[in-house]
Structure formats: C-alpha cells, structure tokens
Image (cartoon, rainbow, N blue to C red; front, side, top):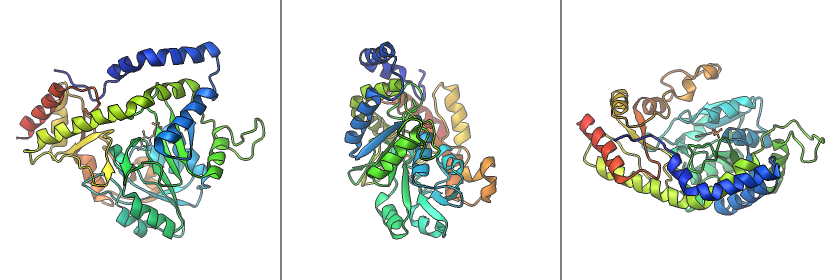
Length: 367
Ligand SMILES: *Cc1c(COP(=O)(O)O)cnc(C)c1O
C-alpha cells in the first residue's frame, strides 16, 4: 500500500465540474487582473472569517510583506516571532528591513510561548507575529493583552490556519491583520500561488490595497512605493469554488487526526499532537514526535509512506539570519522539535486502511 503525504488529485475530482467553467469564463473574457472574481472572493472570505475586510494577494509571503509595510514596520524596528515556522515568517520581517526577535516554543503545541514575549520586548519592538502553526491558534487572549499594554501591532501568520478557531473566533481576526496562503498544500489551496490579508480596520485595508498595486489605488498616482502583489483572477475563482468545501475537508482532517490519536494511544514512544481546550485545530499538518525520527523517516520512505519534517532547522540557526546573533542552544525547544518532529499524511481523502497502515508501521518500528 502506498500512502502519499499529500495527494491533491482526489480533491480536484470533487471540484472539477465546478472549477473548469469558472476558469474557462475568465479565459474567454481575457480579464486576468483583479476584477469581479477577486472582489467576489474578498467578500466571501470576509464573511467566512468574520473580518471586516480582506484583500487577495499573490502569496502568503506577500500577505505578510504587505501587512508589515502597511503597518510602517521597517528599518530599526523589531518584530517578535517564533523560530519554529516556515521561512517566510521571519523572511518577510527581514525583507522590510526589520529585525526578527525570537521566543521559544511550547513543546506540547509547537506554538510560540506567549509568556516569553514580554522578555523579548525592547524599545525597538513594533509588532508581534504569532504563527498559528500546523492549524492551531497561539494563545491570542494573553498575546493581545500584551500587545495592547505595550502598543504593539499584531500580524497573525495564519497561512496554515484557515478556519482554525480560538475561543470561537477565527484565526487571523484577532490582530491588526491576518495573513493567509492559498499555496496548494494549505487547507484551502489554489492552482498555484495566492494569498490574502484580512483586517478590521478600514484605513489599513485601503493602505494594503494601494500597496498591492505599486502604492497607489489610482493608476499612475503613486502615494508610496508598493509591490505588484495581486492575486490572479484565475486563482481567486479557484479559491471561491473550493471555499464551500472547506468545512467538510477540515472535518475529514480532524477525523483522520482522531483516528491516528486512537491508534497511537498505547504507544509511549509516539507523542501525538494535542488540541488545546479553547481551540479548534484544523490539522494542516499532523505532527508527531519520536526520538529516533530520522530512522523512522527512512523506514517510512522504504514502506512508501509519505512523511516530512516541518522544520528541520530552526530559523535562528539559518545562515541568512547569522547577523541576528543567535546560536545553537538559544531556543532549545525549537531545536528539539526540529530533531524529533515528523508530519504524517493527514489530507481529508485518506481512507481508514491507509491511516491504519501508517500507524501500524510506526507502532511496529517504535516497539
Ligand atoms: C505557507 C506559509 C507561508 C507562506 O505562504 P506562501 O503562500 O507559500 O508564500 C507563511 N507562513 C507559514 C507559516 C506558512 O506555512
């Protein structure tokens, strides 16, 4: 039995009849840039998230960049975030000329430790960038309290967390902005690159809108230097078609996670992910921890079971961030997670037999 880490083909089969006419309509119209499909998606996403405004953009990375730029974060500013995340989180901070300041993670959730944020605040701190990693929210209530107390902006990296909830509220709607990705491997993926920024602040939304098209909403009138960071009409149409399916797909992921949890229950060698009581986890990834991770990974590859390490090297140890002055040992929990975590297949269309096969293979190997 072959079990891929992710197979998008069965999902495409579910939406094929709906998505192809939408794509054809755009091609026939030859209207590829912004326009009605993008506006439609932005309205649907605002309603879905419970946010006042959303802005479609070219990727999750550009969503983060736009948010940082719109909040005037740049040179001499510091942004507090986690070293255990996809590169784009800290990459976007560096790209605007600001400095990432890391705090370690909670080993139980892989999420940034909110109780360490205040220790990392300096006179230069401008913002906090929490990452709702793997599909579960950071503790946003204490985080927002800290942000208010110290007058810091909050840019939520919700790239892996669309539809994830904290105290009943959607990821990406707590801070100044929520940044989402439609990269194909995210829970709501398009047919290429795409992203979205949500906000409840009108002035911020207008600024983001201008920054998306070279810094001015009126053509050839540039109020500031922006980006070309639009979402394609084609990608917006794809996401619109998929959005009504998202809740069902999320349920599929949650069911798969529950089955894995059950199957690993008697195995003390496998630490399974936890869902915090006030959270709704959407399992963009189902990440276990094992001591002999690399050996297990090689074994699973041999058995044709897909798996991956998210992430093998913490961001404070990346060569490009050597200038930040961190060294090995600075964030021990993040480093431990990098050595012991392993993401297993969790996509909604997996069947019971496949999950049982994955769990059985792991249980036998770790016995
Ligand atoms: C995927 C991802 C991004 C970047 O999104 P892209 O659309 O690939 O640019 C940013 N942060 C996190 C945590 C991600 O997982």
